[in-house]
Amino acid sequence: MMNQTSEQESIAMNIGPDHLIIFENVSKFYGEILGVNRVSLSIAPGITSLVGPNGSGKTTLMNLMTGLIQPTRGRISILGISPGDPQTLFRRLGYCGQFDSFPKGMTGYEFVNSFLGVHGYTRKEAEERTWKAIERVDLIEAANRKVAGYSKGMRQRIRLAQSIAHEPEVMVLDEPLNGLDPMARSETMRLFRQLAKEGLHLIISSHILHEVDMMSDRVVLINNGYILAEGGVQGVRDEMGEHPMQIMIRCDRPQEFAAKVFASDNVVEAQLHEDKLGLFIKTRNAEAFYLLLNRVVVESGMNIEMVTPVDDDLNAVYHYLIGSNGGGQA
Image (tube, rainbow, N blue to C red; front, side, top):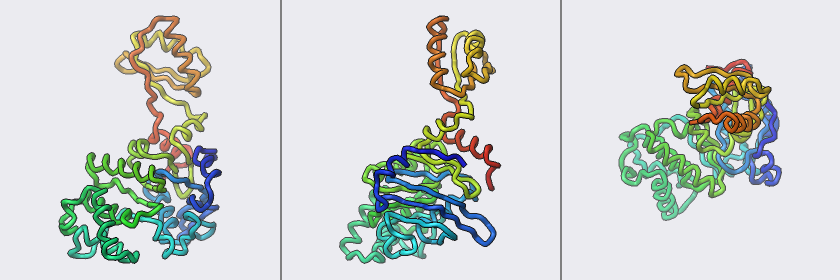
């Protein structure tokens, strides 16, 4: 496991426990099977994405947050509320699970409205909140149609509407982008960013790593029940000093460029691209390499067309960490 002092931890130190999601040395075992082990997190408002393969422990963490299961050991606090007090917790928390189930014959409007009735809203309040939530997920035209006739993406969005209708402070969303077409995904991510700006905690699990990169304030990388790393994506990447970063350079004299930079201590590998119009550089110190690059260009007069990190993203970070920690579960 990688220990990291993240930006989130710095923020959390300045926020009281009544505004944080806190895991203190939490473990969950299903008999002899490990769910999660020794998890300690302090999660500030914003979008936090849980990333890991099937069986990694993402859903276990979410179920612990929502009180659907109780920890074997350790303590959990959601804005100062114990998940063992579901009546209080669910007034301030919205949950959208990965699998959908709808009462037979119910319309989208009825599905959201009936949930608000459980929370004790008056008929007028429930109606206003129902339409507001349905509008936010762009399902006004389909609101009075039966959910049984909805597409997978529409069912996903109506469940999302239900989870936000009572205007919770914490939202726990298990694969909320699953089944959405590209336009709906974009709109849903926009909604998540807006909710985060309003001060909500959004805990999101996803396997669509480039979208996690785009929308997350921070990530929690989990595998085999253990937290591998957590913090901002770039912050996690910066902590991986032992893992060389790969950078692609397109230039007019790649062989000459490779010879000049390979002599540097900061470059551990230089490989020509198959089209002979560029090369891949691996460096343990990207900042020092970029300074070297500028110096080589000035001294040699080379024409550099493009410089781009090849693996400076969540996908590369996660798969490197998985490889470093014994692989993942299916």
